[in-house]
Every structure is written in structure tokens, then in C-alpha cells.
Image (cartoon, rainbow, N blue to C red):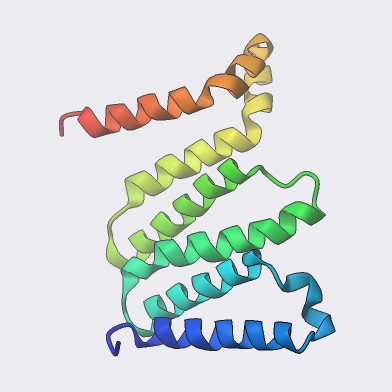
Length: 159
């Protein structure tokens, strides 16, 4: 247990505080008793282990958990906030690029996921600019197939 000391410590302290305040019905935190808060706590634990425990492989899950937890709160308050699939790609790209800054690996994948998330954010404007407004519904329906094709290409391409 000593190997992941910071991760275990932050999880236990964070969950303990979360459930303690929930059990005593601490009203200022009432809107935050949800699984989004637990995701943020898990993400912070991963990031703490990455920073203080020198485990740079924990950056990506830390960014994913804490970012997705924050997304759950922000998405309910802002109507123009990007959809979940867009945020997942954006969070993966951020995590990979931060891992690249620490370890030196993951730059290509980070920029690929960043490009995909930017395309998802602005796909209607991009298709309108290119004069492909008739294909917006087609894209909205078949974008998963495009992702599978890109993934298959990356999996089977020769170096």
C-alpha cells in the first residue's frame, strides 16, 4: 500500500469527508452530494499520486475523472456547454498532452484527440463553411463509424 500512498490517502480522506458531510446533512454542500463529486475526488487522488508520488501514468485517469466530474456540474448550468462525447475526447487529449509534457510520449495521440474534439465542437460551422450543410444530419448520425474507421486505420497501418 505504500507504493500508491498518496492515491490511497486522498481517496480515503476525500470519501470520508464526502460521506461524513452527507451523513450530518451539511446543507452548504447539499447540491454536491452526487457521483460527479466522487469523480472529482477520484481524479484529484490520481493527480496527487501523479504529482507527489512521481507516477506520471496517473495523469490521464486523473484528468478524465476530475474533468468528467466537473463536466457534470457545468453542463447543467450552461446550455452551450459541449456534449459528453466531445468533452471525453477533449479530456483525453488534455491528459495525453500533459502526459507528454511529463514523460515525452503521447503527443501524436493527444493532438489527434484534440483535433477530433475541436471538430465536434465546431462541426456545424465547419460543414457550413465548406458548403456541406446537407450533410450535417448525415454526420450527426454516422460519426461513430468515422471514429471506427480512423481507429482501424491507426491500428493496422504500417510504421
